[in-house]
Image (cartoon, rainbow, N blue to C red; front, top):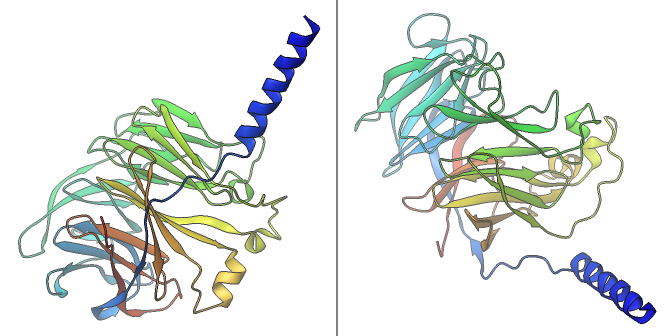
Length: 335
């Protein structure tokens, strides 16, 4: 019996050691991407994007009082229409946010007008046509939200608890929640589990900034898979040192077919101090969390981006906090 006892202990130790030394998930392919530029027209200061092929919708920063939204034809990069101004009248917004989604409609929520949410169609000439509005019953509206479908969205309740919450426009309280971090940490900006949420009609994905980790869930917030790579522990994060802590997944886009996750592996201080920073890579996963391909950039990597999955082309901009006269364009080879 004693021998069997020792054998069981040895087996348990072996299993734990094997799990702790499990290799990183491997990407079957790697490619280097060639930079192209898409010229912009007029005075632009891009901040949010959405893709409704063949159109790209660009939202300018809040410093713009008019011409808030620009619509470009991706076949020839022509500016097809300009829409929106600050105000309270028709076609006006107080504090609008453009939500990237896989819906056929362009979704804009006005964050200082009780999160009134507008659904716009887009015609063949690139003109936005109002189809309807919805008013979320939930008091915090579409703050930190990702759109699942035309009635459901998921949001990060980061300022009160480390949970993802699923709601509809008619829900006063979340239907379901999923806890991703330690509830005893009150400041999510210094939470080692801080991340970003993305959604489509099949998946909800949470990408961690301080960990090299991604969680894939279904649209009922049931956990499907955790993709985890080896990474250095961030240690103790404080309000004073958070800009010195290495960030991992800093931006992403969830299409209908793939997750596109931008890995930086550098702190904010390192990134902002080097205008020619070349450390970022784009990691692509299928909707079940399987690594597909890893891309390296031969030019600047975008800080924010969207992907046109009709042509597998990435459009983005580099965060230099100033007006831009072009977007960064990369053709995603091999998808």
